[in-house]
Length: 213
Image (tube, rainbow, N blue to C red; front, side, top):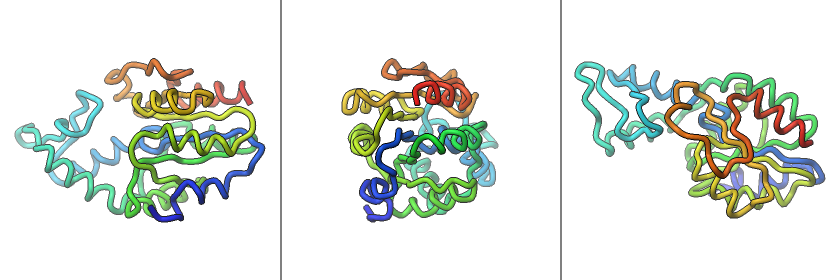
């Protein structure tokens, strides 16, 4: 992984002695499902939101038949190759603006080295200049390393329960927030048992964090 998007670069940009907010990108900061559906519909396809996964849920508009997993994987690679236009999740911009004066903020996203520059452009277009860590696999180890740089409470926000569980196991001292940005997706995934707080929206997440800073 390029040093520009590695843990070391992010650590160098985190001011020591401050609390830290570590946030996922897709469906936490950025509206991934909306963007992917727009991309699919331009190709005669659509995202059928019947479960919290992409494979098996991409269908053809004409006959509603599902694409093969290998076809969905290829579409995802094409979609993510130059993806810098996703819209922010509601209330994320103002909430992070309010928190940024009291805590450092890092984006921890499972993107490849090739996809990372577009992700940075997307964040910058919204006005976010936060460090991006391009991760692979479970996020607990990266959260632990990042939180060690902070002073005071650290927070990890993600939509995927497995990542919250990984953080609970590897960095239990970090407060974990389960947040799903798209209201259509919330009924498809129960609140994580490994989260300290289930946030219905960014207002809820912001209050939980602010009360502990």
